[in-house]
Length: 357
Image 1 (cartoon, rainbow, N blue to C red):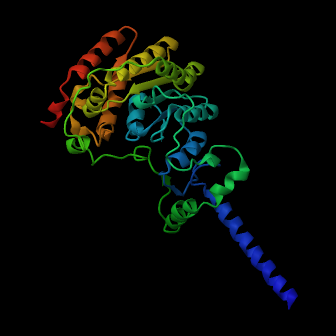
Image 2 (cartoon, one colour):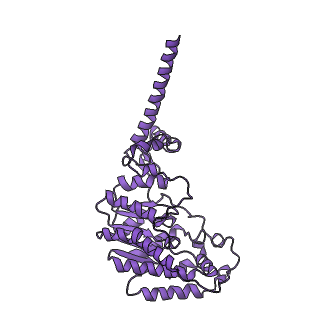
Image 3 (cartoon, rainbow, N blue to C red):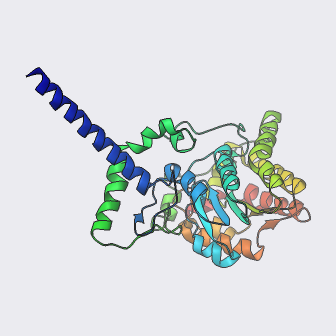
């Protein structure tokens, strides 16, 4: 009787082990997060988990241009970029990312690809004067096991409930139904906000603007922090890769955002940070192009383009691509003084209560 029980236990354990090997084998073979290889033909891959899938896209896809950045990059259409610049691009957004997170992932792109022609990246104002090694700690557990080459911790990927139920099983279902293979386009990947922009949303929770008595400049500590951040996470990579054109731009946040800065007394500080960052980038390398679109007041003051004070709809992303292709909004050593004088004039002197009319 005891021998029979041991036999059943052994058989049960073997079945469990075989089941686990089968599940892990399917994850490795189909690899919905591209941790081991590029997509397989005949299977449909859904893109939706940015921080879980971006590293695999970075390392295993074929491309010669990268569109990356925070949520300000989510609504770009790779097909529009490719049509304008003659490239094969991937879009790799990291919502809420610090400069370090974005730069670390760009490094991986250059480590695995020899012919990257362009990098398109917004430089968010809120992350300019920030610690150079800062990482977001408020966005849940970071899937570091997908970013290292340690096979031992891949168990977190191979036996991940979400991977199995929300990616692997739907892939198998589509294949059994005979649906065509493919992948979510980089036009649609992470795209959002399209139907949610309005003046009401941009002004939500705000009833008036009152200017602060004084506009504060950057402190010495903030200046040093900005310089270290820009050098490590923006400029150094461009210096190391002179064969690549880096298209950096300051995103056109809405007039509501500028009005809030004026009310807080930090408007002058933000313009100073933008100007200092621009000076650093233009002084260091010839392959960085810097753009700012705050002079396009037909966008910034039209709040129907925004879902909140900062995030704009996909039509603005399309405009940005066309402006960059045309050289519109480019800041150079020759015009930077004039540009920042104009920007200061616009946003320091505007009566933001006009936005309610």
